[in-house]
Image 1 (spheres, rainbow, N blue to C red):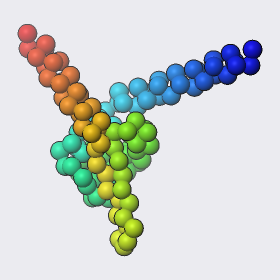
Image 2: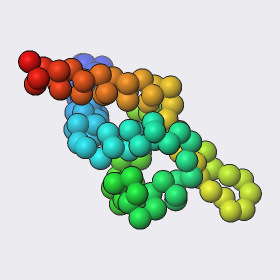
Image 3: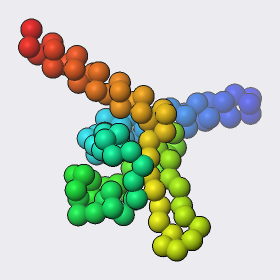
Image 4: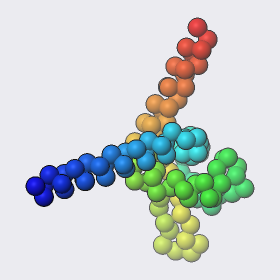
Length: 114
């Protein structure tokens, strides 16, 4: 009996996590973050977010950073010496996701034109 309850609660937790991730990645901000990183490669975090050059501001980025890390789409490296900068870049999985997003966009645009 206890094992069944545990399984159900674990499944519910996994479902909730999946639902949260889907909602996160269906919003435009994380897609913009991934696409900009795809264009720029490895970047210094503060420069990447400077004055919204990428269309993504600190508060928005901060909201999605954990989800992008948890999904394995970005990686962040922290320097051990002054000025202790952080760099962000796409993982291989993140690069593949961007490729797939671009393919989806091409398919949609092609379908609209026919």
